[in-house]
Image (tube, rainbow, N blue to C red; front, side):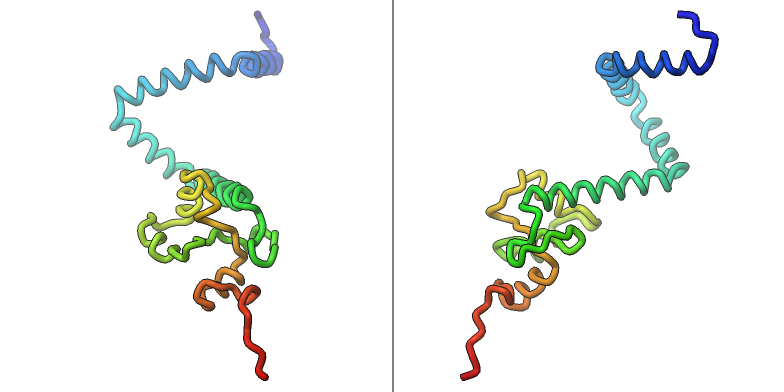
Length: 157
């Protein structure tokens, strides 16, 4: 293969990668793991420096990861408020059915996405968690476990 034209060479290399990415990717990962095992401290130093040098792109990658994790978690738990049926993702949150959320949050690391990782790692148990919109979630908190939509308010007569 003797492409002297850089565009043809680039196209050929791209196609070769697409055709052989499983083998090439596995070989590259194996080499990287071996290098990292032998140069752990240097690898950590390089990774830290790379994050500092590319802060904006790392923040964007993390932001996309958190949004995807939140969306997939909420969709796996039903994708809509279990009380009022709200479906707008911006309004939805994970709710602990047994009202153990405050105690559970204290055991989690701080930061966005911790609860979504826990729910995912537990296999999205629908007997333990549900999706509620923020209004129903807060109403449930104020109503001692019952949302205003489900509370029976005695008539004033």
